[in-house]
Image 1 (cartoon, each protein chain N blue to C red):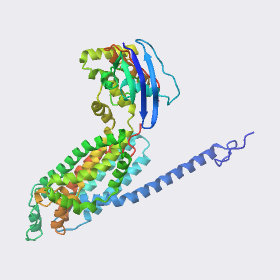
Image 2 (cartoon, each protein chain N blue to C red):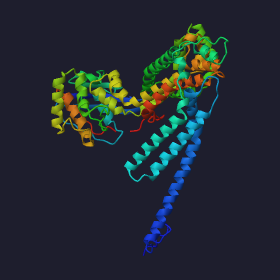
Image 3 (cartoon, chains in turn green, brown):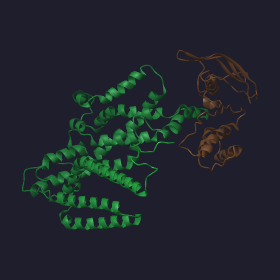
Image 4 (cartoon, each protein chain N blue to C red):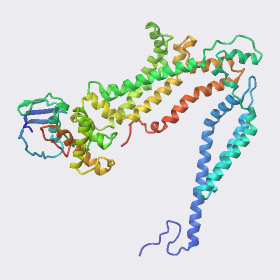
Length: 366
Length: 160
């Protein structure tokens, strides 16, 4: 005779349908409460991250010269918050897919209309004047009634080009060197291999800022100070250890058999590497490419130290000098430059997200 | 076909002696199976035969010619690995085509051989890479590279 199953809080032999309903209802409300608590927590911790970006956007598209105004921010935030809550309710209350789509569309439409009525008149693109007018600083200053000479800015496209060049060249070099080095580290035995692996990690842990003075002197001696090539070399040197380490993990996950098989199939070592091994670590290559590019794109300290002429400015330096020159006069332009600076890396991250998610120190599974 | 001879072959990995003084003659057309516990050197012998490992000492002969230093790609040997060692980024057809590409065989003829090899293992090259196919593709890859050669493929089932 089995003991009555009481661990569910109910005697299964004596239970009536009403008892089961009560249990189900309790579980349901518990699940809901947990979900609400979880969402509340997640919203609370993500707000400090989302809010500044949102603010940056609203300032860039709405603020006028000489006015520091947060009205647009609060209005658009209110619309957005209401819309999110409405979406949430719609998703919860909708019984069918069709109902949900109708609800979501209606809410989106309503939110757009309210947004256009409340905020629309304040939105404008004048803060993006720097895209077409290199001497925008003087114009902005004269708008505010200041006549004092402004910093002579290069065209923003020049800075954009420099940043792209630095990040792109850095990516190309890292993508060439890191897989080769990592493959060797992963596949071959040689003296001091373990020490080399350890040193890769130590190099990465090393605060690179401490090297800024010797780096400056070295670049000066070899004549690469104030050149993009010098900065690219320095950035590549700092980026390589980590890239090699990550690539090594990916190569470790490629079985030996595949390579041996390629060799007996008539491939040389080089062909086996290029045609059989490299395609298996494609995700790793993409991951280090994106990370290296974004590191180069956002680089600030080294370009600030090693680049002097304003034709060599990168986007981060451009951003810095814009902030230096017109901050206090026009927050709108500063924010607009920020948005312009932000967009490429955002696009890159979104495009590569799928591959970045698969990256870990251990490489890919499977 | 060819006669394969191991002559006092030794293989060392650092301090470990994986194969000590191996002497073996496989006559032309002979079917030979190597049997033994794991770690006894079956795979090591086969890898030396295929040209993946270099013997530490001794001689490996194909028809009385020493092939110790001959590259794997020049030995004309087929091998099926325990893990199948398929190239996961390629289709089944490309997997089977892979060795033929290195022999500079015209595409038409190569595709014909792929079809013939697929027929041999009774699978269509249009088939998706199902698990059944995964076990057949390497077998068809080996003969596809060997149809052109005088030597029979050497297959190993366990390479652990």
